[in-house]
Length: 431
Image (cartoon, rainbow, N blue to C red; front, top):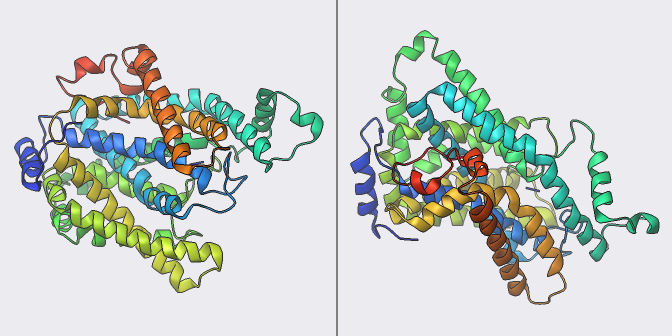
């Protein structure tokens, strides 16, 4: 299993907002409201993606599957999956650098331990259990799950607990909370490397002002910059079976390729925090980059369809890896530029969704699967998708507002108890 108030309507206005709050070293005094919007987009788009998987994945791969995938939804899943979690890790690195700059490395690591590590430990099994209930119900309803008659008559809770007990280490799936597991691993490795480098002679040269950093900044600001930034990712994706990074949710043994790719995104985001003036360049280029990302995704999707139907040769595999790497870099920087350009002014709606997005993503999947099972008999696909998303967002946001936002749970997840008060002074309470 594997995720408003429009500010300026022109690239120049988005650039002005960033430039007013950023120096060459990237020290910011005001909130970057566009990044609040990116944060909400990165997580909440995962809810929409999961709502479509019942019509893309085969029976047995999902609680309710489809014998033949819906081509349009498959293309949507392919595009969003190519970049969404990489964008999430990029943002995590950006905001991590912000927290370290304001509060120090020790405070940042304590924050990660509580808001990432502890959340994972506390919620992983309750959420897996809640997901298993509608998952099994869907399998029994559609017939892909075949059980002996006496077993099938057992309560769903008993079947779900029995299924979880059959998992053995290290093939214990973290479910959709794998992103927290990998975020914690990447953070620990990155901070350890940062601590070691800080004690070497080479660390005496400031990273932000180094020649390498300046050249990287020039590349990132160039209209074709994302193409260059994609180059290190191509060989990594080429080593994967599908030329794309699959969700590493099969067990607790870390996937080395996933760690490297997410680590690169996290490191780039950390570096970008010291070069926030680049966000203005992203805001000017977003239309070009998103258009190119859709073109690259269309190419890789066409190859993926051929792979799944008749198979492909090695040359097409590497062409797909190239297209997927380009989609990743172009979409990540393009969507950042879009939201910086169009949502750079304060918006209570965007800020609320950004605050709520962590909770919504944590709890959404049991709701999604349950509603998918409920509407599986409906014959009209748009009605099914609309119902799944409306019910999921309504329940998730209502629970956030009533039991999370201004409670100790909210303080645990978002790093503060009252987000409404925090709006006036800014916050570092992000995943």
